[in-house]
Structures are given as structure tokens and as C-alpha cells.
Amino acid sequence: MLTLLYAIGGLIAAYLLLSLVFTYLVQEYPRKPFRDPPDWGRISDASVATAEDGRLEVWRVEPEGPSRGIVVLAHGWGRNRDRMVQRARHFGRWGFTCVIHSARDHGGSSPRRFMNAARMAEDIEAVLNWVGEPVLLYGHSAGAGAAILAAHRHPERVRLLFLEACYADTHEALLSLYRWFNRFFGMAFGPLIVFWMNLFYRNRLKDVSPVRLAPSLRMPVMIIHGADDRRFPLAFAYKLKACLPSDRVEMFVAAGARHSESSFDPAYPAAVRNFIARHLGGMEEEGA
Image (cartoon, rainbow, N blue to C red):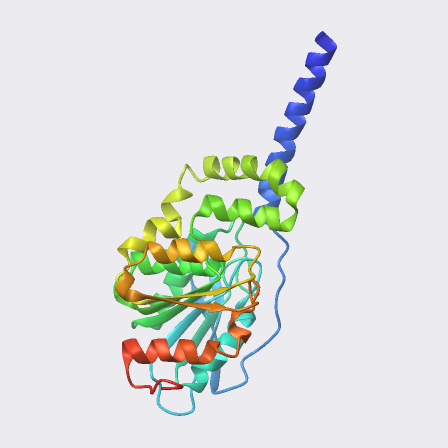
């Protein structure tokens, strides 16, 4: 009987230890840098200071003619600034200055262990400080969660907010992500990984959840989501939409699109352009 108890205790200890190892590894998830440099306008490559003496690699791409304003684009987890260039091309074509950065520990920016959406928001805030004027802010995936946090903290600096493939609740999103990666891994280790994370971040995961921050946002928000997103299902987007002021939120669902494919939908450019035209003016709506 004692041997059995020792065996059970050993298995529980091994499970707890393995879950701690996984908690570390998922925050150091292998980076997948993307290669797609800007190919329009006047391109400058800058280095911007961020929190904790970090440095961000930043592209600033000016249009050939007068600028309609500035759009800041923030990539998702594991990627880099190149991942947002395909989206930025549309804004560049419409005459906007595009500012695209890599978050810390991504691309060529400075290293930083235990990156998360809150620290990615710090990087967005550093870019907003560097730009020095109100912007259109566009975030994808974890970058969208970070964009909400930055907009919540500095509403005066964000004219329009674009949230592509965003999650609603941080706890729910992490569990969904782990199940998407591997169903067994997500079911067996996901809940405990989230528990350790919440403990590590002093029970603040809910404080930075988009659904917690959304009701305070007053700038117009466009939610962009793929109908076939398996990492963050479409239900997350509807949940987030319900928390935003109804007169200031619009939603574009890309049929058949997965997590990073909404911007390839043929209807995407017109939807984004028309949203800008309705709220900022100065642009004729496509298809009007």
C-alpha cells in the first residue's frame, strides 16, 4: 500500500514538474520569422527604445504623395514586422504612412524572456510615443490583444482600432490555443499551465483580457476574423463585439479564412477602406 502511495505521489510530482516545464516552453514558443519587406513608398529603418532598455526594429514607410495619417501595425505571437507588410500595402496604397515594428524577442528586436500581450502593449506604446501623433492602430492575434490594452491606456492616441483574429478572454484563449496545437496536450496540461501563468503574473490574466477592457473603448473599432479560425474560433470575435459600444463597432468575417488569412479575402480591402471613410472621411467608399 505504501509503495502504491509513493508511486501515485511520484506521478503527481512528475505531472506538476512537467506542467511547469511546459509553462516555460509555451512562453518561449519557437519564433517563425516571416520575410516580406515593404516594396512601396519611402522606406526608413529605425530603432525605437521601449521598456526595460529594450530596442525595437521599426519600418516607417511614407507614401509618395501627401500622407493621410499614420497607421501602426502590430504582429502576433512568434512572428515579426514582415508579417504585417501584406496588410500595410493596402494602407500605403490609400496614402497612409505605415509604421511596422517587431515586438521584443521577435525579429531583430532586443531579447526579452516571458513575453506576453501586456509586454507587447508596452512595445506598441513605445512606438506611439515615437510617432508622436494620433494613429490608426491595427493588431493581429496577440498583437490585437496588445493593441486593445494600448488603446485602453492611451485613447487619445488612437483614432481607429482594427482587431484581426483577436481573442476575448485570455484564459479561454490560452486553452483554445493549446487544444489547437494538440488536443491531448491542451486537455491534459492546458488548465494547469494557465494556473501557473496566472500565479506567475499575480492573478492579472483577467485584468488584461479584451472583454474586460473593451467597454471602456470610445474610438471606432473594426473586428476582423476568419470564419474558419481554429486557434481563436469566430465565437470569440462575437463575444468581444458584444462588449464594445454598439454604435462604434463593425465586424468583417472572412468566409473560409483561417487565423491569418482574413486579409487575403477579396472583400477585405473594401471593408477596411469603407470603415475608414465612414469614420474619418476624406476617402470615397468603394462600391458606393
